Length: 361
Image (cartoon, rainbow, N blue to C red; front, top):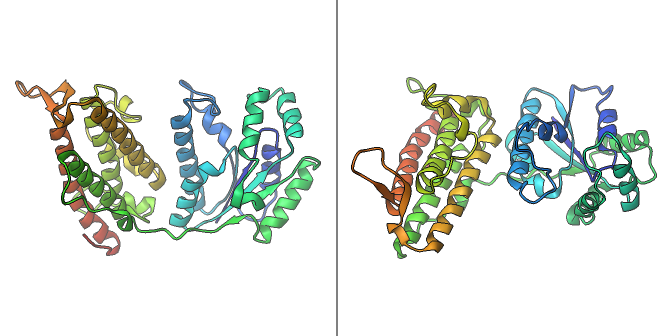
């Protein structure tokens, strides 16, 4: 299967060219547009070019990668029309390496004056602000090693652009080299043997986080949702559960905030094991992105707490639900997170070996 990312600034002709590329082709093909994913955000939408949109944009990218992967697994080629800058390529490249599809990257890049004239003159477009258009054009102005993936469409009709791009794609142009997927084991760093208590605890926590990533590396959605009877536990469920554990203990208990989405809106009374059950509906990219987002949020909060002083004796905003225990120390929470990961990494060992025979410490 081939996934083609057709991108560029507003007014580059992406939508029209994508429609032409996917019309009357010999193989089953899907045309996805990133605008659809953004427009699906009914409440809380932030224009993706504004400060404060990073988390939203990362979420949309993860959702888009998940949809692309699902169609590719179903036997479809996919053409994605949207503003997919080089900064959004890593999750697509990881998915291509993991799932075995080819990835092409095509940047339609008319000159600035043409871009401004087209983008600001459209009545059906949401982005017509000249300064915003200039900024997005500048983002594609210097592509470095990807410069050969750009095509100047200043003086081209969409039909001519589509024909030229199709011919180039058929000849193997615009393809991105599929990266060899490194084993996360290679990136595990042993905790320091002589360090202060905070550094030691965080070293062990990072080690166990990376161990879980290693245990799920290269698996398909079907493998992540496969249990090992009689247990109903799955590797996908463990990924989502430990993302919840991170956010529950650091964001919710320690800082007193709401947990990260989607955990903040779950009806836990209706399903106390929702994260384990719902993981079956998530793609590998979505599950890993959720864990990574929870880890990044935890680390940011931990850094802020350490900088504020109080050390490991600093106590949580919320208290234990057990009568008389009071608030938790940061030391207790870090040790508990390590315990959670260590216990579930043992489960992950067994589940991975049962799936494909892969084993290791």
